[in-house]
Amino acid sequence: MHPPLSQVRSPWLPIVLGGLAGGMGWGIRGQYGHETGAMIAGLLIGLVMVLLFAPGWRWADAARAAALGTIAMGVGGCETYAQSIGLTHDANIVGNHDAWRWGMLGLAIKGGVWIGFAGLFFGIGFGGVRYRPLELVVLVLALLGLHWVGVQVVNQPFDPAHRLLPKLYFSADWRWLPEATLKPRREVWGGLVLALVGAWTWIGWVRGDGLARRLAVWGVVGGAFGFPLGQCLLSYHAWHPELYRSGVWTWLDPKMNWWNWMETTFGTVMGAALGLGLWVHRQRIRPPQTESEQTHNSPDSLTSFSSTMLLAVHTALVAYAEFAPAPGPIGGYCYGLRLLVLPIAALMFDARCAVLVLLPVTLMPIAGKTYHQLVIDERYTSASVGMVFYLAMPLVAALLVAVWAGRKRNLESAAQQSASVVLAVAALALWGLNFEFFHRPWPWIEWTYRTPNNLFFTTALTALLGLAGRGVLMAKGGEKSAVEGLKS
Image (cartoon, rainbow, N blue to C red):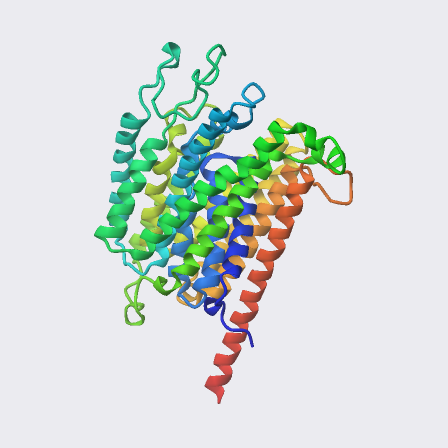
């Protein structure tokens, strides 16, 4: 009889499974981008950590923990980083070691603050401190103010027409290419750093949430190492092309999407770091209420309805911002910290909204972007086929599973079974949509530049499904043992 997963003593299980979840999630994000794409990694990592460290929690509490990390993983998507990457591998700058080091420093800062937010909010969910819903909403609103101040102080001036850029600037800069025609991008990492420090101080020290304080640091470390380490693959390939012109590389190199491997490596490192961080501080993991408090009043019908409406408004705004031809001011809704306000309010008031965040809300923009890419942009398949297979099937399945997992009986039961089912459905849906986005790169047909990445995603999917299947079997075994105990 294996011990419960929460009692596994070796760190290798959370490191490996966290890394596979992060690598798959962030690698798939590469096709979908921005804040809503980054939430894929938060979703997979969060559910893996629930199954490893909190399988016996109430599903209501575990779902909140996973959902908080999921939406927080998207915050850093407002950062611009493509030009920072360019400083380390663009053809016209290859050989400039100072530019390479500066670009890597920028990636470390941007990656660190990005995953730092995810670590902080995962810590909020797993750390046992009871937070009132409005408390977190007010916190996020305050962070929006800190973000604005940080941008004004650190990321200004920004006037490319007159070649006026901030002193600490990690994108396209005439400092490195004085004669080039550049289009610098506005950076906002200073605002995110100030917001993260403010949230870390208040949550970790004022509220005394020791796990959140520590896990935020692990997130910063994972992002600060993961992003530059992934970029080393891309820059090494650009700096040493001669090494890829002989041997097996003559066949494999044209089939390697080095950019996507950079993303996959980044996700693997940061997922492993978050898993290791939770393992190191596993003694601090506890649900946000004691056994005697678990019978606290459930949300009344008005609160439940209001929470559902908040989440519905959030989902509608995301859909409009992502897919409307001219979203106007609403297009700014999918931007950094703004995306946290409504879903945090909804899921903290009603745990069923947390389950909805984990499935249909996170999956909706991914399904929509798959449809838009394959049907509208590429005409890879017909609108009717795309409507059924890219939109209807994954979203209806996600909604049905969310309704099942959000039943009161499941919310009050141990998290293991519900978390396992939700992880399996989410992983399969995300892998399947990305597989279509990749034009079905089966390994037994001619390889394309999508095939190697898909092999990694398939390996990760197999591991996640194995974890989910084990969770279901253990949950069923526990139920059977309980029934037999009552009979005896």
